[in-house]
Image (cartoon, rainbow, N blue to C red; front, side):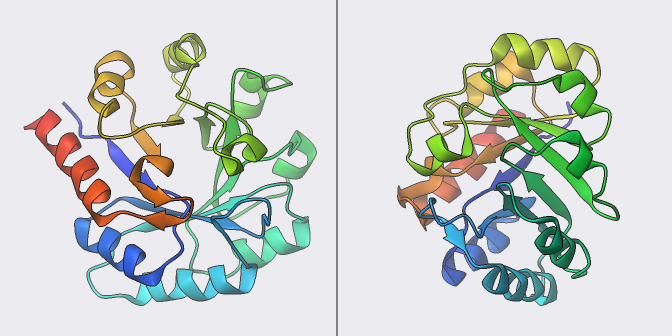
Length: 215
């Protein structure tokens, strides 16, 4: 059975990032220039942090820029930096914009309320990230637990590459692994003390829970 990959998202504090690297997490996600979120950092801070992560010894983490309706000029600053592996579009981005993003892996966030054709969007991105709510709901901690089981199974059956997100924590992660067999899980609130402040204990427990599941 192939082990899933883990993304810790909404990272801010350097010591939290360093600990996640030490734990061997697969992806580090950063909310970039979205002031409505308490997890947001500026574009300048993000690019500096991404460079630091990539130059840190023993770091094998892939860096993810989480953006919400970001201007294309700023997106290009991210894609051309050389320190970012994935750009995650978490707003109302349309196909016209998506098609202009080159040279980087692209994930598009989606939820049960998402408007448009998710199947068409999936043809132009590397992964669809299925979430429990919008970027604004997530910023306000109102998105709740993942509720898109039907959509997840439908897209998975069509061999569309997915990321599972939304309310995942140590209490429910094994249930999601059993029911959906995700390739990648995305965790933010489930490893926090408060919005933007991560818990080393919770980060470790999630890693242990996933490792125990596959042992």
